[in-house]
Length: 445
Length: 195
Image (tube, rainbow over all chains, first blue to last red; front, side, top):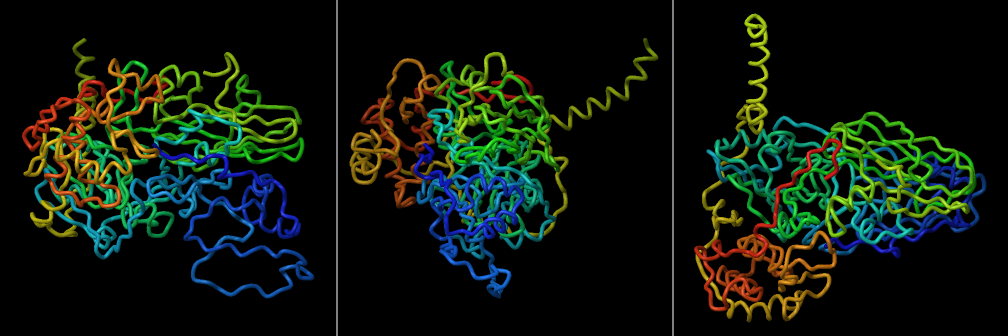
């Protein structure tokens, strides 16, 4: 069971720090698109359980800013690796478990690329410390030539670079099982992130070893302490699977699979095996613990779904959202993310009246297959209570279902693939609370 | 009409060709170049690293074990997390228990614990997972006999095999798990239907 955060991990911190000057606030906000989001959630929010390896943020000046402001003082010198502004405190949460998950702070991000150090984590036996000079990817089984590839070998093959999301198929579990108002986008859906990945098509590596005609599956195995392993059909291996070594322009970070990981675009996160060390070719799936005991979907008809690889279309409004508080009526753009494991997002509709009427939001280009897509709808809040929600449609014609639809086909005990419509209730005082997929009668499709 | 049929022939041929290509797994489309990168994996490396066990028993090592030996090991190595009776000490999972004995109502009740006895469909997965990942703080430290013994203990404690049954590469794959027929392939296909 994936541990899930409770409300203590992402407490609202709406009060502005009295020590932060107005000018510093504006400077921090101006550095990012969507400064309004930051301002609305409190630019001086308290740290959200920063990972221990992260350098401690420099404390903002407590009082008495220099006369004339920072533009009248010589700044700090150049550094080998940049850091964030001390006014920015976005972090993953919760942290500190070797068999656990940390969630991406979706409400703190703009655009579609997740900074690598904020990419969600899910480890089953901690993050291994791997020296790339001592790491090899072995490919064997039903092949003509069992081979091993080093990181240097991989980098010499023709490379491809693609932008894709990853999502743990348990993402949204606590919002489905135990929804409550005080949940942020991070706590509802933070087990998804989006990156630009660079690597080698798995098909190219399979050509090198000469796969036998009777092979139909491969086992991908990681080099962590549990040797996490998943069976992958060769159709996917030859379609768009990659063995990647870079993320957002730099080597993959250790918590995301350094020095190499499998990337299966659109398929549940667990199969995108990190710290990839072995691929075995065979005729049948291996039925590992992670594809039988876990990552299967019990259904109301006394069966359980096996090999539910694809992630269906989904969306979430990331602003306005808990813990933001709207300062008053006026223009508040509705922004969010949509994605589908089956292709591109073709439409995101937004409702501001609890699901009675829906309006097409604008999709920010480029709209890429199996990648986070940013949507936005201008909205003028009149100051009365409102429920806002989003509904994604993908290129297959699949429409994100209501909570009632999902419960009726999957039952209350389903354990993965929670993609029901999510909403936010904006109260007259401007506070925003998570609304567990409620849709007005007759309003949902 | 004969003329119409003749005109349609190229279209039909193209469709058949398309069907032939899409019916495969796409390996014809793969980059066929041999880049001369990487090196041959020695047979001894493959034998050492290839730890996966298939449902038919392929990969199971020599050795054997019984529930009696497994019970002692479980108390020493596993009970600290999984409880003396395999009841699970949160957040570590419950391993032993067949309740509810009727049906497979996990989709209707999220509170039901999924154990080796009531949920795991294949006995080989038990051996594979223990050898891969357990004990949590010392994975890889158990001998093949010890893994067979722990597997036998878990299967016997879940009332799937008798307490005197010997588990080895021949007998383990023959064990029939209670949940074996409960698993169905994913039938979601995208499109307008929600499944």
